[in-house]
Amino acid sequence: MSYARSRLLLGICGVGFFVLASIAAILSGSPACWLPREVTWSPSDVGSLLAVYLCFAALMTPFDLIGGYVLPKRAGTTQHSTISFLVGWLRGVCVHAAFFLTASLLLLALGRLYGAFGASVGVLLLGSALITWQLELGRLTGALGLITELSTADQDRITAAMRQTSAWGWRPRPLILLTHQDPGFTGGVVGLPGREKIALPAGMLNRLSSDEVAATIARRLEAIDDGSRNRGIIVALIWVLLGFNLSMALPHAGASSVSELMTTCLGFTLWTFLGLLILPTLSRQASFAIDNKVIQRGISQESLHRCVSKFDRFQDDEPERPRMIETIFHPVPSASRRSGDTKIGPPIAWHVARMTLFLSWACMGTLVRAVHCNVGRPELWVMYPTD
Image (cartoon, rainbow, N blue to C red; front, top):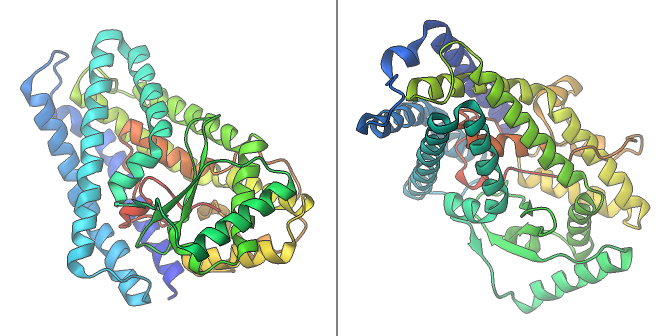
C-alpha cells in the first residue's frame, strides 16, 4: 500500500472512530452522567474539562504515533528521531490543550451569562482570533521558525519571483518564509482580510525554480485579489457557527454547564464530519478556477504543472487518484486533474474545507487533527496543507 493510501486509511479510521464514539456518547447521555451539570462556577469545572481533553489526547495517541512517526518512517519521508518526534508532538498537544481549555472556559462563561447567544458570540470571537493569529499559533504549535535573513541565492530567487508576479499584474504582499521539518508543509495565506501575508515553506526554495516560486506566489495572490480567500473564511465561519448552534439544540446540550458544553461538542463533531463530505467540492472548484485565472494572466501551463507536481511530491506523492476517492476525501485536486484545461467555473471559496477544520478549534472540534493530511503532524495542525 502506498504512503498516500496508508494515510488515507488512517484518516478514515480516526475520523470514523471519533464520529462513532460521539454518536454513542450522545445516545447514551454519557456527558450528563460523568461531567458536572451545575450552571454555577465550581473548581471541578476546570478539572473536568482537563480530564475530557486528556481522554481525547489518549484516544488520539495511537493515530498520532502511526500518522506522525510510523508511516513517515516506513515511507522515508521524515528525518525525525523518536525523541525529536515525541518532543514536537508533546509540544503541539500542550498548545492544543491550552487552547481547548481557554475556549471551553470562555464559551462556558458566556453561555452562563447570556445563554446560547453569548456562546455563539464567543465562537465568533474565537474564530476571529484564530484567523488573526493563525501564523503565531501555527509557529507555537509546530515549532515553525521565521526566517529573517536569506542567502544571496535564495534572495535572488525570491526577488526574481516577485518581479515576475508584478509583471503579471499582481500587487505585492508581505512574504514570510518559515522553516519546517515536515516535507508536507505548504504554507498558505494568513491574516485578516486586508492584512494578508503569503507564508512560504523555506524548504521549497531549494527545490523550485524561480518561475515555479512565482507561480506559487501568484496563485495565492490571485486567491486574495479575486476574493475567494475571503469567501472561504466567511463560509467557514458560517459553517462553524451554524453547526455549533444546531449542536446546542440537541437534548442535554447547551453552554451553561460542562456536561452541556461537551454534549454540544460531540454534536459538533458530527457536523464537522458532514463538512468533510460537502466542503471539499468547493475547495477543489476554487483550485481549478485559480489555476485557469493565473494561466490567463501570463503564467505558463508548464510552469504551473511543474510547481503543482513538486508540491504533490513533497506531500503524499499521489499525482493520480480515483475520482470517487478524490471527491470524498481530497479538497486539493490531484496533479493529473490540474494539468488539463477543462475546469471552468468561479473560485467560490478557496481552501474552505481545511479552513473550516482550523476554525473548529473554536468549538473544541475532535476532528481537527484526525484527518489524513495532518494526523500526527503538529506542523500541519494549524496551517493545513493547501494548493
